[in-house]
Image (cartoon, rainbow, N blue to C red; front, side, top):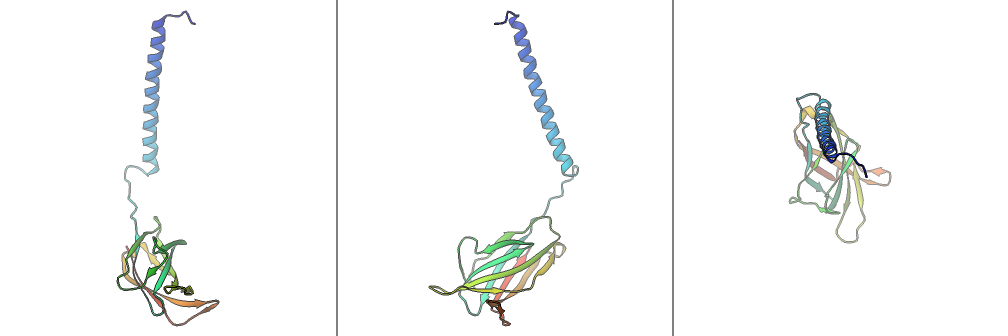
Length: 167
């Protein structure tokens, strides 16, 4: 054991505690300053979240659908909480968040179609990719058409009509 003065140990402990508090304060101030600088100063410009909403789906030949929405290379699936959605006027709408910090959205759709019971799954696609500028939003009541695909053959007759909006 050390034979030093007990009061000197207390002073050393007090100095160490104060030094710890000072270091913590310096670290906190540096963190706030770094965040301020990273944001580009004091004026934070909030990034607006845009959404795509599926409003309706119609099909001439199928009663069930699974829709794949592709936006800027990111795939979304409707319905998101079930395997199939029944096609009809009372279909639930669903919204999906779009990639932030994009100036344009490249939008396309494809679908898997079926019937109730043991039935084959059919595909419907389109080669069309719609490019929508963020500056022209909102885009309400948009329509996209899909055509049946079988193997390497794509029909010329529209089978699926998708109603959607981007806000």
